[in-house]
Image (tube, rainbow, N blue to C red; front, side, top):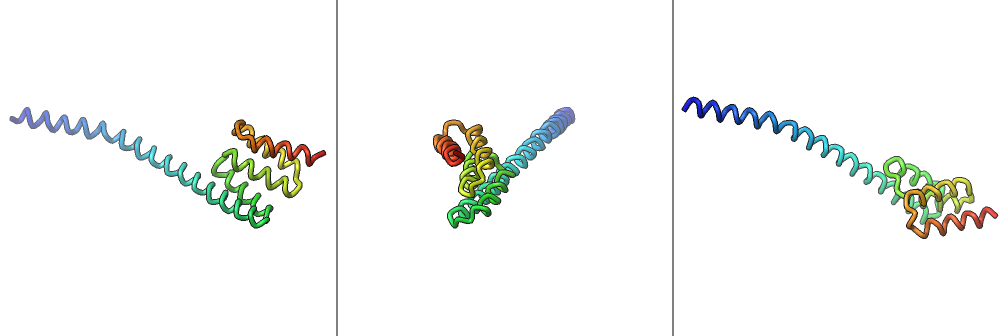
Length: 124
């Protein structure tokens, strides 16, 4: 009976020790997921604020908000929004730079190419 009890205790100790590594790994993964989610959420907040500023024709503020969104996410839509607002302010070199970035991140979006052509036409 003592041998059985000792084996059970030994088995419990072995399984308890091996489980802590997985728990640590899972909690570390959860922290990384939370950080990524928070970054995406902050980017979305700034993108929405930039879109509202753009709708109110406050293009300088829109650029500030979109630029801040880039600190948290580098999606092609943010680059496109920046290019569009720089074009509206007639800042063609910045518009061109961000239009190229938007195409580099998503070369399938036709609106990005349309904006690029608008920049070239306006530069003539």
